[in-house]
Length: 213
Image (cartoon, rainbow, N blue to C red):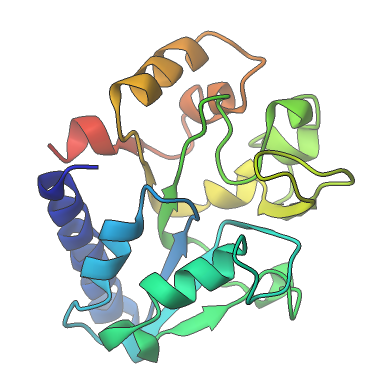
């Protein structure tokens, strides 16, 4: 992601969190793993806002110890939960396992990464036939995979699509031309998880390569 886009995204996220705090006295942010959002996280971590009123959740994680090199929680603790943002309330997905009843909905912002196979969060092509995973009419919940998925290949926990879309803003990170092609392909290919995110009218989907350039 280029510097201009990450600047605009981090400032836009800060603005929404500020607005939520002003209106409700608190704000919620759902974030993703991977390399794509790291520059956003590092800039956001220095933002001047009431971080002690912000709750941060991971949209997905690998079922690993929190200090494992491939843990999204580990990535977050090193890149976002630092500087000013270390005052935020962080809720791990793995240890302790989060309970859906402990989450106040809707979220203020959900930030999603994108894989070349059309997966987002940890919702993979192998799961497209699971209505509990990708139906917007499912009960908002967490999905745990029974087998290792993705690369690196681990068992995973993920918010389902119904939970991810229970948000005021949903932003998809489309960081290069290859991923833009994935978006275009997924718009008509229901074997790709992204199809179900694009072809829904519950929550407006913002694209980093279109809306923040």
